[in-house]
Amino acid sequence: MKRRNFINKTLLGTAATVGFPSIVPANVLGKNAPSNKINIGQIGCGRIARSHDIHDTIRFDQTRFIGVCDVDSKRAADAKQLVDSYYQEKTGKKKYVNAKVYEDYREMLLNKDIDAVVISTPDHWHSQPAMEAALAGKDIYLQKPTSLTVQEGQQLRAVVKKTGAILQVGTQQRAMPQFRIAAELVRNGRIGKVHTVKIGLPGDPAGPEAPEMPIPSNLNFDMWLGSTPDVPYTEIGVHPQDGYSRPGWLRQRNYGAGMITGWGQHHYDSAAWGLNTELSGPKSVEALAEFPKSGLWNVHGDFFVKHEYDNDVTVYTSGGYTNGIKYIGDKGWIFVSRGAYTASASDPVSKEKSSRALNASNPKILESVIGENETHLYKIDDQHGNWLDCIKSRKEPISPIEKGHKACVICLISDIAMQFDRKLEWDPINEVFVNDNEANAMLAREQRKPYGTNYVAG
Image 1 (cartoon, rainbow, N blue to C red):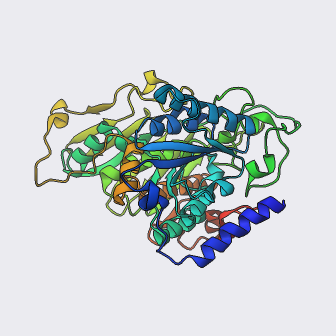
Image 2 (image 1 turned 135 degrees about the horizontal axis):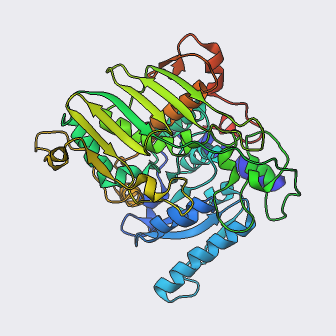
């Protein structure tokens, strides 16, 4: 406890004494100047970190992973081995890096040699470490969803704006050419005036009852819970102790909202790209959803959500549609999906059900060339690579905090609408429900001290 208090006080003291927006990430100055390596710390070493974030960042020569952090010491040790082995194989040197292992990410943030962090934690541990990393002068790659609640996202947005940190949200569909092509064709009127969008998104199944179990000695369960309620430990409610298959926390409302945020932020972000609504949002939301009546898992199953926009576009989302995004205009339609891509082997949608990456009502639509004077969207080849380039250039990445937050908000208000048997009016500018105190009460959650975004100074 003394060590935790020391770390807390040190970070808070730093936040209080450094003026905004004068924080300059370490990579801009000194031995880690833009011409040299970007030293990276990995926060969260589970399934997505191993199969996606570490893999897709470490392969760039401009990076050097020098620290790994996880509240499960087994996972942290595995991540260290993964990183050290990669560099040994690449350089032929046994201790080229010798990555340092941390249990508490706040201690990692005190390491001035670390320029940037990749955050691949469970959803309830996204906003707080991202805020504290920005306050510590680090740049951030943040897995989606951006936040557990709308309030958390607003707090993170404010801190990133003040500090000038380069934060890239992990909505990697922006790096997939078919999503950009579809958005450009829609933005440039190739299907006429868009009036409807249909988004295919699966739900989650119910789960078994799960008895209380002894907490493994390798897991700091109190810190894993963080700002969420103190509950008994059970393995399928956290993550597997053997292997890196899909974790059970994904299906519990304490830690996220299920597929509406798990994949929803990807699809809502991509849809907004095509509709040119990235910085706004819907004016209303209404939803129907089935929830488990028993068992540990309690996020939504089958569902249907409807969003209405001021530009007369209506967006429907359901597991009944093919996974992907279908823009429908008065002159045709365009459908886009991930195709054969999967972020990890345990992605919930099989390749067979999402195999067509780009389609249209008329093949000639897809052959259309975007003219020089038409709208051309931000083009990148790789989400992690774009983040690294922007760390050095200090330019805005393709998925900055404001756009990531707005996409996440759509997910979160959809989840809230699932709890009500009525249409909810939404103010996308002020980010509140209109004249609805009951719904507005769900824009934030009580946070368990000492954890939570409410207790981050600065």
